[in-house]
Length: 273
Length: 155
Image (cartoon, rainbow over all chains, first blue to last red; front, side, top):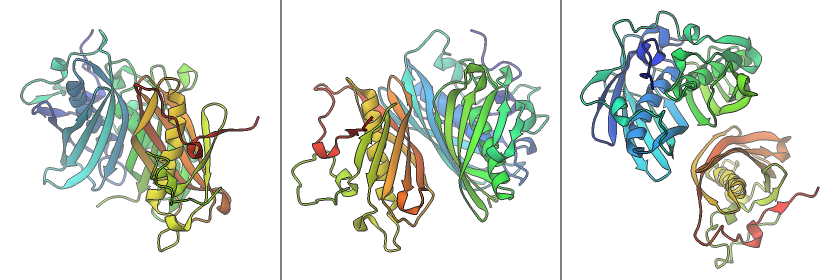
């Protein structure tokens, strides 16, 4: 198989770096740049979820080896805003590695050791296939990075992932499946799915409340891959109160007969400290 | 919906918690499960609404049976992840608990779960997702006590 990720890829442009501990722990870092932030000035939940997905997925693959894994669900609670110029560290730990399921917890802290958030992920163990990367390829010894000399985000994440807002009232957005956002299985990467969910929820909840809400926690159940695209969202606003909103989000792959990809719940508020 | 009977501690083994919320279930078409129960006094907080733990138990009850039926004929399930949002803290009751299969994989079943308050114009009380791992018990799926066995909806 060709090397993953390719030279021009979201995971490189987010400039993640890694350091893997024993087989049950890994750490990763993401520099916070304005392009990954909301208009309220701190890192978008979906961007943090991408960091969580990458470090959690790599650690889960190690825990499940020689089998491979598929992300089943991801829950993220953001408790403090990470502004541009800061660095968010993800500390991942295997909570359970069973025959069919791996559970990972990821603590997010900033460069002053303040808690930014916490995430939990579950993975289903699957029989290894030829197209799956070897664990050695995703877990190198010592510090490493996905970034190259030319990796950076030139525009806010909305732009390069190609968000097209169809109907704000229903949180309906379309996002194409591009090589820039693929996972190693040739489908939309799980962190990008979280990012699309975040943007859809924010769009729907802002339309419902008229307030500048941003997503502060989300729970995603991954049901199927988005291989064709465009991926389309639908948001049901479950409840709103002053400065707060809750929504259910569903993503389908319109190019695959509207196959249901993900269902999610998200909570949004006016911002974080 | 009958009131719970806490005196009988010998039957319903394995479903001791479920008996406190006493959900009566009905199996619909398309792997859909509908449960109904009252907003029992013994489940309420001092402030009046039903405790979140009790609401989660209802979701787990109905979502778990829905997932279990989806895993038949050989398998049965254990809950591995329940995530829900509570949207209303004051309740009238009775509650209707709905669950649908979102995905039935080789190793797990994902079901949507929600509670609406029929006494409050079907206001949404809780909404979430239950993930259940499929097990294949040596002696086959459990035989549920009659009180917990879902009924088939009339066609």
